[in-house]
Amino acid sequence: MTSAPGPLCSEPTSSGTAAGPAIEVTDLTVRLDSALIVDAVHLTVAEGEWVTVIGPNGAGKSTALRAVAGLLPFRGSVHLHGRPVDRLHRRDRAKAVAVVVQNPVVPPAMTVFDYVLLGRTPYVPALGRESAADLAAVEAEVTALDLVPFAGRRLDTLSGGERQRVFLARALAQGARILLLDEPTSALDIGHQQEVLELIDRLRAERGLTVLATMHDLSTAGEYADRMVLLAGGRVVAAGTPVEVLTEANLAEHYRVRVRVIPGDHGPLIVAVRS
View 1 (cartoon, one colour):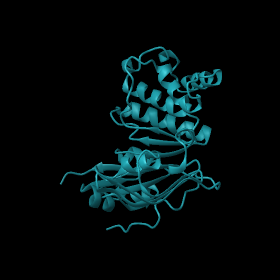
View 2 (cartoon, rainbow, N blue to C red):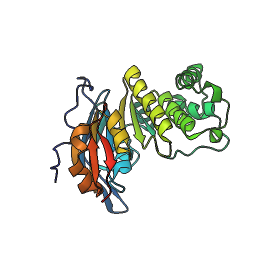
View 3 (cartoon, rainbow, N blue to C red):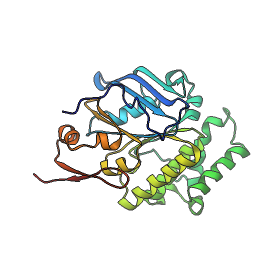
């Protein structure tokens, strides 16, 4: 058995900056309907880093992400840029962190532009209207994510890859420097998976964003993450670089699968092996 490290992701790699952590989680514990889902998790993500949480189904990945976003009650502490998430007003929290969930609820017949405009809600006064600055921010994101041809189309008429770009555009329109992505490539084919992840990585570099994601595809996750966290049973069982986490021993024990780990240009490649 691979021994679990100390504090989760306690040592950022060189791709993080020295400005201090963007996300700092201590002893995060979440219970849902009295069931313990996340158990005493520690997590530190440096400014500009990409950290991906992996683990088998039911490991607590999505629940932990939602707690970090302040969307679930929890015990322990979560700080975003040094501020406790559970003490932030909802508008301030939305300006600090943007979340892209697996299956966002899309209002019927909503156009792409109007959906992205929802990202400006934290900046619109109560009973007020979007300002020229809000509209300009949305136009900028629609342009940056190559969505101009779709701006007037209904969101439910787009392909999966196009919709995922729209979901990202709404998150970016919030102006938050932290992105929390829950399975950002679920239900996408391999081409659209690469397209979306390359886009996220480019925007991270250009804008100095910090990314905390959950992913199922281990090879793909290892290609893009600076560091990885393996959860099992709600607890951290491994953390470090993709090479340190994606080992045959770790995956055999916690996923109950036989694999071969092959060195790749950007991270380990995981190949399932028949018994």
